[in-house]
Length: 309
Image 1 (cartoon, rainbow, N blue to C red):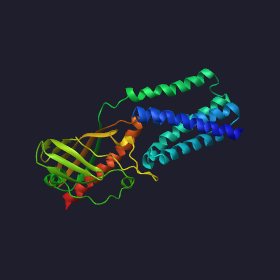
Image 2: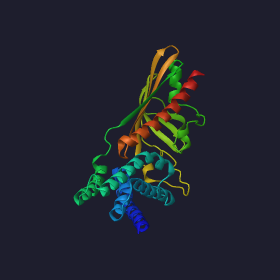
Image 3: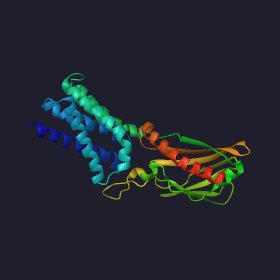
Image 4: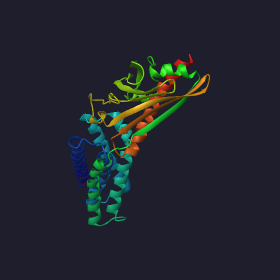
């Protein structure tokens, strides 16, 4: 009986998670609180809660049951071509923590040490369901700036030449670009001055950047009117293209700012302004900031090498 109730608890949790996931992604086209907070919490909470209503269950058994369920869910995302390994790895610290929290609360409720009323249990589920509205009232409004600065041992005019366009960059050694994350390869431009179109070419396509400020040799600013997907997602079973690759991370504008330190030294600063439409924003912003900094450093270091030759 105990093994049967464990299996039932896992199957029921999988069904509920699949339904919520389909509503969130398939119907609402959202990657938000429901997907990254509510579902992981329920994956942790439901198995020990269901089993504990029928049989006594220890804390360690609760954790084991919850994380077995989580492992089945993650494998299912790969097998059914819903998601790739890189994004799962990026989300794992968050969903792992929430699964642990859910499992702990599921154990505590049945142990009668914290909550012991039916109303409290119903309240927890109502909170989980109502948080789906957070995905709609917490749309990103403000652009997020990411700024990276280096010192180039070259005259400011020489640095400017390599900012406007730059030739092919060597293959990356940074580990992050071996995961499928798109990275810059070179930059070209059509025209000069305001209105010229700059193309910053990445491994997945080109950023199309109309120049909005051309203040040679101090400031180059541009908008972003077209951009490629941010990565090629890896799945060991299938070629996939998850919806979050299209428009959930969007760059809006950028700039290069050059400041003369002396005749042979220049401070070079690159800035990107973007939005990320995946919540909780504070978590995904940390990942996107990290990746943009690595992209900036790849470009700025190349400019530095070329200008110092």
